[in-house]
Amino acid sequence: MRSRPIGVLFVCTGNICRSPTAEGIFRKFVADAGMSEAIIADSAGTHDYHVGEPPDPRAQDAASQRGYDLSALRARRVERGDFERFDLIVAMDRGHQRALSRFAPPATAGKIRLMMSFASSRGQEDVPDPYYGGPEDFESVLDLLEDAVRGLLDSLGRPSRG
Image (cartoon, rainbow, N blue to C red; front, side, top):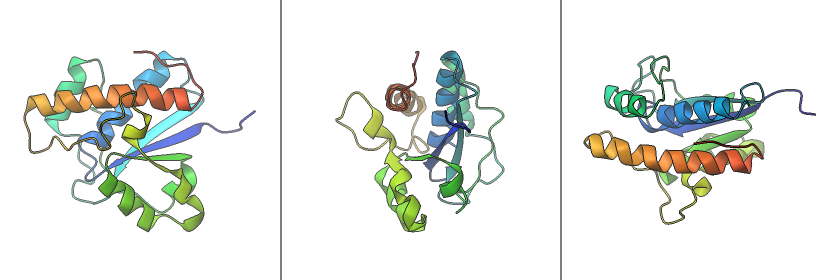
C-alpha cells in the first residue's frame, strides 16, 4: 500500500489560465471519484509573471459555468523541489515540456508528461493558450482539459467521472 498520496502538478506559463483550470477540473474529478485522500494536485508556471495572483477572471468564469471553483488558487512558479514532491508533472504544451525538462534534476525527468497525451482524441499535442483569445477559447480549453483529465485518472488506475 502506498504511504503517501499520488501528487500531480499541472504546469503552464504564468499559472493563471491552463494549469489552474486543469488543477480545478482534476481536483473535482478526484473528489467525485472519492479519491481525495489518495491523489493530490497543484499547479505552477514556468515563469513568475503572476506569482500570488488568482487565475484569470475569464478562466474562473468559464470554469465556474461547469462547476469548477478556481477562486482559491494562486499562481506560483515551478520550484526544483516540485520534481521530488510530485509523482507526475503535466505540461500544457511542448514549450512547457521543454522548459521543465531543462529545469528538472536528471533523475526526475521521466515524471514530465504532456497533458494531451492523456486525451482520448490524439489529434492535438498542445493545450492552446486562451489568454489572448475570447470566451470561446476558454471553453475550448475546458473541453480539452476535461477529456485529458479523464484519461489521466484512468492512467493512474482510478475511477473517473464526468
